[in-house]
Length: 345
Image (cartoon, rainbow, N blue to C red):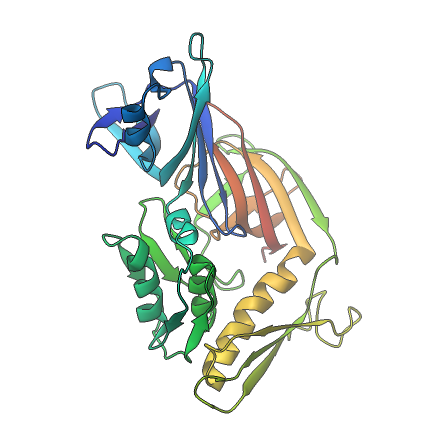
């Protein structure tokens, strides 16, 4: 079952009857979660200025789970979204409601004067988020570290600024399914414990899959550089490379040396340069091995989670979820695109 709640700006909370929709999740997108909900209720279409005021800025909370038939339910949150559009035939319907996770509120609140960030990674990111959403919950799962002073110009993107600051600690920032802002590192495919097994055969959830490799846009080295132009701090840099001799993108192996570069004034020492370089390297070399498969829906899955996949031919692999789309109707397809697939020894 799926639950969709509309939190109107006038304080009303409405349980929305719906006929379908989806919640796409993509860890490579600036806004990680989006949503689309279809309803037959044409009264949802705003028809007056007061209706419009109640919808613009409203939020959707979406959950999916199981109804056990005895009056009890178990629901898993899929996200908290800002409602961005409502449209449909005002007489016959259906009505489609679309939204984005609340990172978009920070993203849209562009700087109207130059903005200067100082202090630490967690402190600077928290200040950026609370600037736009004063009651936001910010959860840090990293070891905090100092950043160099960095000033963004007028019209700058505060959400891009938050991501740049997070990179100084080798981390990323996003909202989770509960709507809380999280600062964390991307799980390492080689060491992370799989959160879900996608098995073929009886009792499994595996439906279909494909496997591929491509060198397009793949790099096996990242040079991260920092220079405190505002404070006069000395320049620092760190080169992170694929140092696994068994990797097809091994630095100095047949793949060759293919470096890419990243720089930010927030990087002030060797530790932050190393953290940023390693973060960017994971993304730079990940597309070399890819997997795309479909399974029965798992609403608890999050982008970046490590999965164990057992194919019908007996091949076992570890995958890292990059993107997927959770259907809101019963039994909908659940395609998952992954990055960094490797054999499960």
